[in-house]
Amino acid sequence: MEENLSTLRIARSHEGQWLGRILIGSTELVVTACKSPQEVEELVNKMGLHPGQVEIEA
Image 1: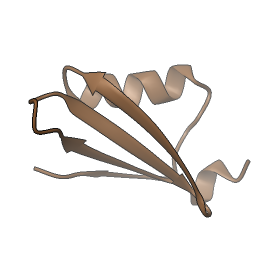
Image 2 (image 1 turned 90 degrees about the vertical axis):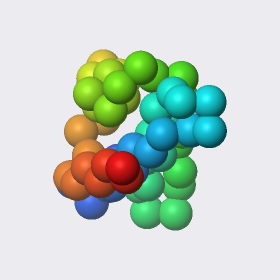
Image 3 (image 1 turned 90 degrees about the horizontal axis):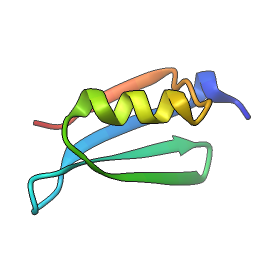
Image 4 (image 1 turned 45 degrees about the vertical axis):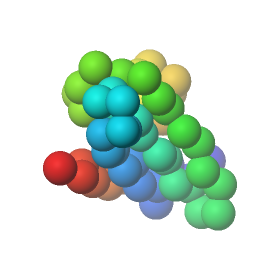
């Protein structure tokens, strides 16, 4: 997997929780129901993914 080319996009859902979308080429993985952007990043790292770029939408 070309993780250094991946992007993690983090945004707040309508329910107030944080979600992350990891874009690796044309593949998208979704991580949901986190309490903070940091929790999204930690969960992604625990999954063994290390995105090359992280974008947080306010």
